Image 1 (cartoon, rainbow, N blue to C red):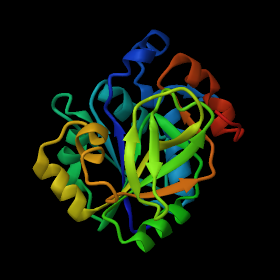
Image 2 (cartoon, rainbow, N blue to C red):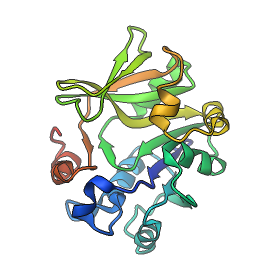
Image 3 (cartoon, helix red, strand yellow):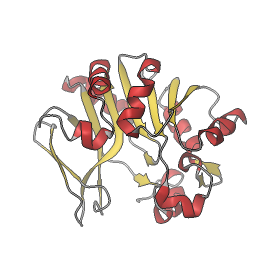
Length: 236
């Protein structure tokens, strides 16, 4: 991971959880006595990450103030980019494209955590020859996320609407080539999921299904469960 820049998408409004967090941005939500972002940066650093670009927007000043306090992992070069207005996940990536210098870029949602082996994900991406790879996990309740249908060649066939029951989901972690990012920028897309990933031809995206714990901190209930997933490695 030392030669792969990481973009963390952390500019969302966090409307579903605002009643709990108030004026604290979601990426700084307290988990086990520490800001969620601190746990995420430690996880990335453990795999050798050296450079992280934070895609900020709503309450960005709180995040930059947190970084200034020195609680972030000291081994990382953390670059903050603040969008001038809400641009969406794809728009935010387009806005920071100039700061992403590596040939392959890891993109991470700033409100999810998955304790997958990133080395295995990178190896899968490189072996696949694909321009883009999606980290996927199996969960007992896929109703909040929607399912990913994967072919025998480990390529994504389709993204399925949300429905009750267990299934394989998109964990919100991606590996993109520079060419893929450049096409994303040129498209003017807003949503990474709806406008980009769901629009590419079937079989374009490589899927790496990891045996890992996953949590989305976007609701009060999932935030309350986050500590045992991030610190304790329990199922979400």
